Amino acid sequence: MELKGLKINFLGDSITEGCKVSCTENIFWNVLKKNEGLSEARGYGIGGTRIAKKKKPSENPRYDLDFISRYPEMDDDADVVVVFGGTNDFGHGDAELGEMSDRDPYTFYGACHTLFEGLLNKYPESTIVIMTPLHREFEDDIRGGHNKADGEGLGTLLTYVNIIREVAEYYSLPVLDLWSISGIQPNVNVIKEKYCPDGVHPNDEGHKLIASRLAGFLKTL
Image 1 (cartoon, helix red, strand yellow):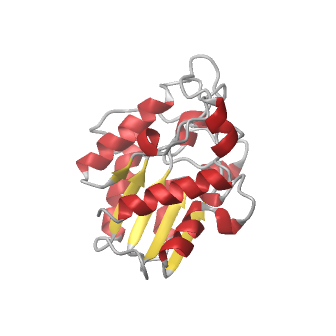
Image 2: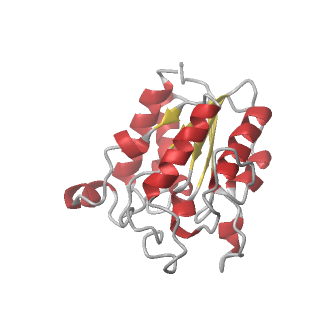
Image 3: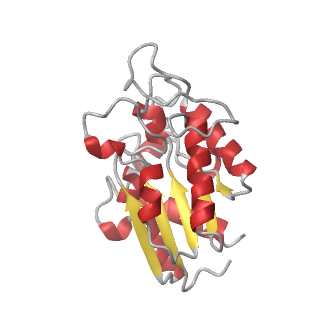
């Protein structure tokens, strides 16, 4: 895929919104726009949001602006749509994991189906790309990195990564597996310091790395 001149929508959470970068220009999608000559790079990131719906309202209502509710509001003329979420479903969502056959947006499987099929219907002529969550501190804690009470956790972050991969494969959507190839693993101190000092949100250097991985991936499509 030739990237120059393309219009790309980016649906995501706090990372897409630019939490912990020094300025908006250093968010990965703006780095991609500058480096590759995109016509438009539109960020639809809201911090704390999840792919799946939440049964119990969050203390911060903004967190409940889930991806399923927001994707219909994105601009219609995108050549490419990039989805980057799931870490907050692990961190503080209350959706059950569900099963592959689910279409209930209050389960994680069902929410992924609802979102991915919805994007295909909204953008039938566009390329839709799914990016898996990055590694984060406490990713093996089934309580969402200490954010959930005992008994509320449903799986490690890798559990959610694998569901995203599985559902995307069902729809034959290309997956940029940042879990596997981002180069960002904050459980290694030197990597944390360089790319992700708070253990969750990449800094400027981390966003440059994501932009580089995404550019390389898109060019293979």
